[in-house]
Length: 144
Image (cartoon, rainbow, N blue to C red; front, side, top):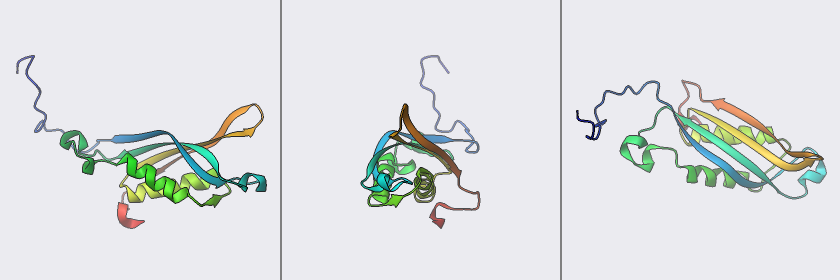
């Protein structure tokens, strides 16, 4: 191979095992009702959400096809639709349901959800939770 020749990786013998791809969503705003105290549940509040969606090596890097990866626009739409009209006491509950939806609806092998809300405590910019979940090896994405 010459130095200026493009590398042909179509049959480079890359093993499929051990591959890990992560689709990220950062700073997603979501409106939902959440809070332990009654005054927090008077109206929906804006939460900020970051999501890392791990797959066991999708083929999009080779195929350049949206069908071979996690469609982040579909995830955002699904999460927003799911949270609209809901009322939860804890951010942990929201993180749990969002994690489960992504694991089972979008074929993720693992997911990390970070949710924050601002203005809850004096001299504290934001409070929140980070939750990580992994799909068990014997679970398929359709088992939801």
